[in-house]
Length: 263
Image (cartoon, rainbow, N blue to C red; front, side, top):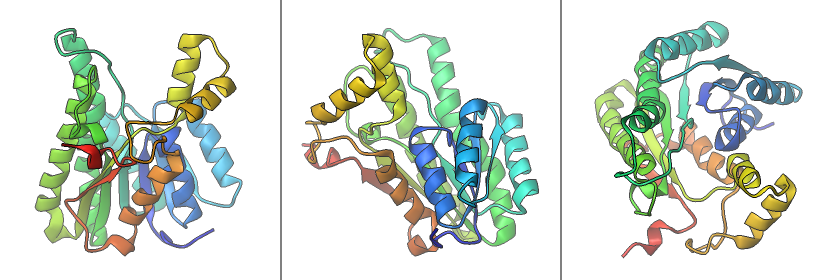
């Protein structure tokens, strides 16, 4: 158990899996009281039970964060449970694959709600609570492909670019409140989501697919491999902590060097 977040209360959206779960475990291990916001109750409960067994304090709230009233209730429950709010980490996101000409208005509504409106709603209700404490830290997980193009992901990448713009604007709006607002932009990360998705499409076992994906690496990055979720969580820890007290309005590329390959 560390102490880099000792005494802080943190919300992690999408905390039941992938980068979110790694972040919950890391933050709890560094002394934070953590509330998971997620839609998967079984997975949320599993993470809570596992982390609580270490003596850390963690809980979960099931919410569709693209619905403003549900985001409000989730933030309210966090403050009622832990007494305050210091940190908001926006990890939760969905993907829609395909080109813009092939997209539908339903797909745009779905991905915009989950990836942009949900972030806005959480920030809307978290910021007043942080003001009561004299400040706080908000970090939104964007994507390396918010700024580096690729085929077939126009909807997803557009939403991730949108949250970068929102991050910068909120940093300007709330600096005087001592609320820092930053973003990270992950590159390819080996999460259970990606492993299970390929396993389902190929009929292979999860174990075989994971070994296969590790062997493939990520040749389009300078480091030639995918990140582990924990490698994405550690920058979030630094931005959540007082160690980054002079950092706001910034975007950190945690992408294995993708951004370094731009022409």
